Every structure is written in structure tokens, then in C-alpha cells.
Image 1 (cartoon, rainbow, N blue to C red):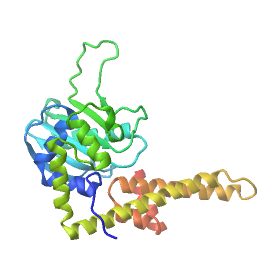
Image 2: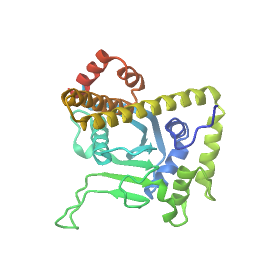
Image 3: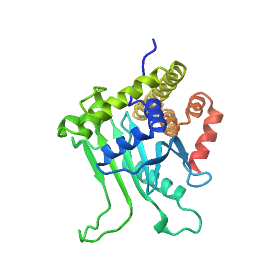
Image 4: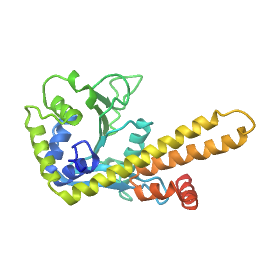
Length: 282
């Protein structure tokens, strides 16, 4: 049975951020707690590849203003290594923005915002802000020009009344509060869901993605279980375990990069899978 998409599901989130730059700006202002200049450009699902043959990343919403660059991500499931993921996203953004011959001072201020349904750091906080400081002296200012913020929607009740509480509550529950932002987001979600062909296509993509992730998790679990097997088949079990674990990780990596068709083929086509492994290992 068909259903409506939620704001927290990436096809809906990406569409609203791209089609409604006014709402995108307000989401950023609420998430960061600072004014955001008029949004000049939003590109949903932008793929960045720092160099030919390197690992590419798919950004949910790449946002440009007159004086800054933003990446805002919606994350509905927990991922390992979020810190290193953000580090790579930052490097990809910087590489994309610095033209040959330009000085480092020309790099714009940049912000990476992850809006998560789950608590990635298990500390129970609704907001985690990361910056670079000098361990030896708090008065030293590095001037690196970037900030990372991870929002934990599951802890929205810990926040005082205000726009951020309302936003995280809406992300977590789809309940509209008394603030104007969530009401406007809900109206935009309702309007987008009226586009039936797009909605159905998006639901198919979400189902495929979840199926691939489930298969990856199952293969990794199988690999761990077989890796613990004892007896005369120990050598064969270890080999199967390694292969299953490798396939599970490959599928997860492809899904993170938005390469759904590659993930589907990798699950069933051994030759195609080997080519992908060589590509990603190079």
C-alpha cells in the first residue's frame, strides 16, 4: 500500500531543501543558532570526488550563500565512524571550492550539519558542536573556518522551548509545534506528497535501499557467525566468513555513496563485485 513520505526520509528532505531555499535557510539558522545569508544555490544529492579514482561522497544538500558553504545531512540510521565521515566530507568540500592558484584564505566559511534520528555519541545530548581549539591555550584562535554540528532528534525534549526544539520534535515525531518553521515544513511536505509519480518512485528507492542495507547486515552477521565456527570445516568457514563480511561492507559503502544499482548487482554478480572491490580499494 502506498504511503506519504516523511520529512526525515532523504527523497523528501532533499527535495524540500533544493526547491525551497527559503526553508533551507531557516533550517540552517535553527540548527546552527546563527544568521544565515540569503541562499544563492542548493544542490541536492551532489556528488563530490576530490580526485579521479578517489572515494566519492554524496551530499544531501550542498548550500551556497554569498559568504559561506553548508552541507546539511539527514541521517535516519546509525553509521559507524561519523567523525571520519565528516572529516572526509570537509576535505571534499574544501577541495571542490579551492581553485588552482588560489590562496587558502579564499576558502569560504563552511558548516556541516547532521540531523540524526538517533544519538550517534550515546551521551543523551540534543546538540553536539565540534570545533578546533588549542589544548595548551584557550586564547589561541586557529581561524580554520569550519564548524561541525550533529543534532540528535531523539533528545528533543531536553531542549527549552524554541525553534530548535520544534525542529527536532518535528523530525522525530512529525508533530507540528507552535513555531512557523515546522508548520511551513509540514505544508511543503504535504504539497510534495501530492506529486504521486515522484512519491511512488521515491518509495521504491527507499525500499530498495533498505533491502540492500538489510542484506549487507545479514551478510556481515553471517560472516561473523561463520568466523566463529569450529571443527574440520574451519578453513572453509573462515573463507566464507571473510567473503560475506566483505560483501556486506561493500554494499554498505555503495549505498552510502548513492550507488543503488551497483549495490544491487554486487549482491548477485561475482565478476561485477570484484571490479567494484578493485575500484574502491585503489
